[in-house]
Length: 305
Image 1 (cartoon, rainbow, N blue to C red):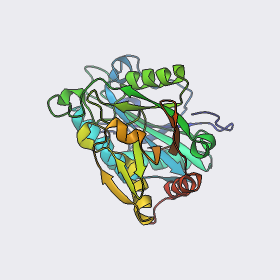
Image 2: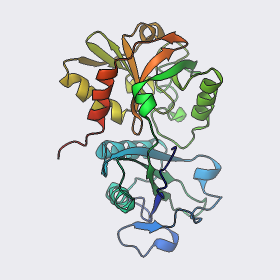
Image 3: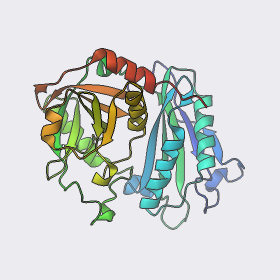
Image 4: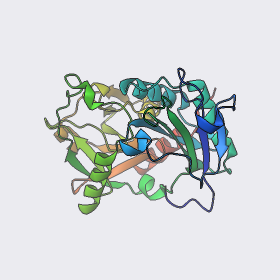
């Protein structure tokens, strides 16, 4: 995550991660299902399927001045991912408590990152593994102000692949991120900072860790989840911001050429928030610095309850 400013991370084991499973292992006696532990000690067996096969799910939640952003939406997406992978139903109240406990145990910081992980656990045990990891967010000042250079890469399947092939787990946030990491390395080789995936039939999808938002005049667009992409929690709040500024917001399939013709584009995600695209496949794209600054400020403002 970049420079932590000397702050230590916080690790909370979720000892009752699922509704249908008993508490796990050594911490079964903790009634609230949460145990703060030493983040530098070993807590996971190497035979855990999350390690061996990437058989698990995660969410990364931005935290602004101690408040988790879009927590309900992240938990709902977490549960949806678990269902797609046939994992046990996560006990969302326990996970909520674990997230808030870990955030509360961390040193005060303007921006933090809270990562929650649920795996299928060790074969034969019938117990899922779960934990929350909280650490300082990186310094995204340059990406948010100067913008990022992006390349488009073929994702290798059609935009409608999810319907005939649900086993591809499109739309689930799984631990199997090797392809996404490989795409980011390819972007670096091409002198870029990030990636926008494009379907094999030419439609804009998403970034490896972000959602794409595109502006044409007074309209902003993003790709619908029917194209096999993740539902964007930050994108939803970004649409609230744009709507308040008088922009028309829509979900629409976008051919790559429409992205290239955009007046502006952003990659939005839970911790970096909004990064304007300043170059697409080597071609410059305009950056609205003032609008982006207002967008980032809005995204970092926890909603009033």
